[in-house]
Length: 397
Image (cartoon, rainbow, N blue to C red; front, side):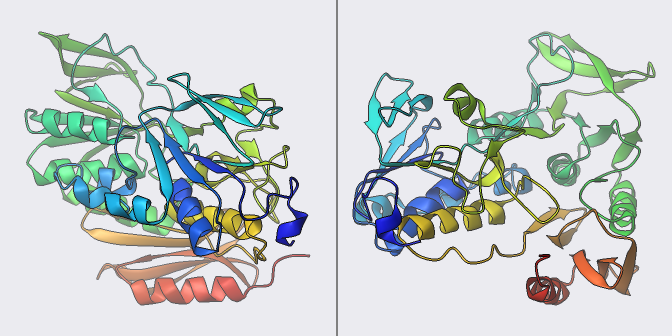
């Protein structure tokens, strides 16, 4: 595709509006400038803060290095002629007029629109009774509240044994809180890790004093003086808790697209270039459902947001998108770093390299003789080797 093939003939001088100031949105704006886009570039975000990284919120929520979370200093956006519209989220799209309406009533025109809307937390699955000390972790505002509550608390219940819950468990144990993780599934991280690595992490967390309740569900909370004090499980068990953090997964933030009549199916439906059913609109990162050899899929990782934003910027500036890089992710918990690459499902055997006892090992997943994914614990060199091998695997025809 060349610049002259763009649907409105705007080339690299049209109006580019990016909705969402996360990793994908910020990378899209940066890459557009790097690849020669000369027209206006505007990034819109409902958060009032300068665009910042989300993953460190769960990995370092008890710290207070807020400026360190920002992707760039404020001078970067001025130097690159990127206009930031913060604290004023998009509420509606007019596709016929190519306009974005913001919460303030302001209207932005576009020639090309990129939706980097991310995901939203699943609803809290019980009545919070309006109590303080109960929250989720998605934004800096959430992190500020959790930090304040954590240093006032003695015991915490984390609802959901996903990455956020387990990373928080490690941090809260580090400041001396009694920590219980409640999970409806029979094991932790069943959709993300092999049984080998999941069992290893479970043992590490339990050795650190984290109590794990699998096959359990929180059905109610009780409070005193407006602050949560305990939770009730479906078994009837009562757990003391003056801090409750809910991390039961996320949903694609696709309401804006659906309301505008774009194709949506558990995320905004896009093609290989992340173009939606409207050729002037793209969707990237967590909110996008894109084609893969195994069928349409969504990926919720920083690297995917970065890579999809880069691809859209290439397409808009007339460059070849090329193959998408191998997806990868990482988590810091229970005193180790786990790095994952490729897919989790679709394998029929695993191979374990290194030493589980020494917390330096890798689990490789195979479908027959084909490497389809892997995870490495305390072994970054093996993680990089796995990514290189996955990148060399031919895509299915």
